[in-house]
View: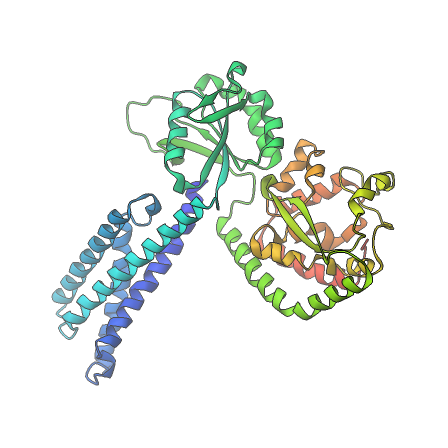
Amino acid sequence: MLKKYATILSSLAIVCDACLLSAAFFLAYRVGGYYNDPYIHNDFFMKKYFLVFLITVLLGVWSLYIMGLYHSFRLKKLRDISLAVIKSMLLTFFILSAVLYVFKIEDISRVFVVSVFVGAALLLILEKSAIIFAFRYLRRKGFNFRNVIVVGTGRRAQKFVEYLDQEKELGLNIIGLIDEDSSRIGTTIHGHNVLGTLQHMDQILRLCVVDVVIFIVPRNSLSKIESAIKQCEMVGITTSVAVDLFDFQTRMEQENEMMGGIPMMTHEATPPDLAALLIKRLVDIILSSVALILISPLYLAVVVLIKMTSPGPVHFVQERCGLNGRTFKLYKFRTMVVDAEKKLKDLMAFNEMQGPAFKMEKDPRVTKIGKFLRKYSIDELPQLWNVFQGDMSLVGPRPPLPKEVKQYDLWHQRRLSIRPGITCIWQAGGRNRISSFDQWVKMDLEYIDNWSLLLDFKILFQTIPAVLSAHGAK
């Protein structure tokens, strides 16, 4: 779980540090006036400087690595990080100096070399400090937290809870505990409520916003958690099981992830390729921001048409459920009369969708301009702002209403295990021709199970002709 995030962050940090080392090298090169020296610009000496540049970058990254600056440095103190950077730059300087001496490369200015490492140390300390302060600021503001339920209240579980409470930079927020003993329900352990027993797992997953469930139970309770793990899998929630079940007296190789000194075996129920998910988010930000700029004339035209043809606000704002049940405000152009929600009860008998969702082809609440906007999906354009904010993605299961989620069967909830989207696999294929909610969910789960960046782009390209032809729109 955390290991994959750490790997991606470490890779990005290595690239950034290599760029900063390069910047320090070329900054010293220009400030020192070496670019004006015709002697240095001789091809022979330029090759030597380029060789020194490569050695500097490679040695610099290596020394930062062995000093532990790519292993959860966010949990360390700024003073310790600054010292580690200085030590790594000194180590790189001495190794480089030794290389220059051994191979008798005497044409490289020692003042230049010192300038490179002084500049690199300053840039790297500033970079690490900025990252630490940025992450801590986001944590204080409540961003980028994953909600965790810990199953178990024994000594190991309590020690683990204390660890997560102390290490807030990990971004794991405990929302409650689960215990085998029903008499402990409602009690507090280390400031966290016992929400229920394993028999209450399905109810807890329905009522709470849960991202991860961590099982830290005794060896004799392993057989009791199988059903709970399967329920989490059905819903699409990541599970981790503590596997330090035996008190070995000798040191053994452990390939599982370590959290708070406890080895964990983690099962990801959602797409595991975090690097690809990061690219997906970057694509969402870039495309949504560009699209918002390009469609601004159309946006203004729609605003005028809505105001001219029906009383009420331009936008329809509605609470929807996103990733793992988190609620957010979804924006659409208003296509119905103002009191449409109040009239819904009278129309439920005409629902053409089997299940909790409501679909009606000739909905009397839709305005004249609203029919046109819906036909070509223009009413969905304000959701580009939801995508830019991070509540939604361009491609993903459509976000449901909270009241619809309350009616879900347990297996339906796994469609919430990924960020919702403006378009999805069933919209691109047949748009609104689907009449069964179960069929709708099965297609969403097919998308989740087979997700890839290529699939997203395929759906986006299929959506364009489907929208323009208004095929299957309601």
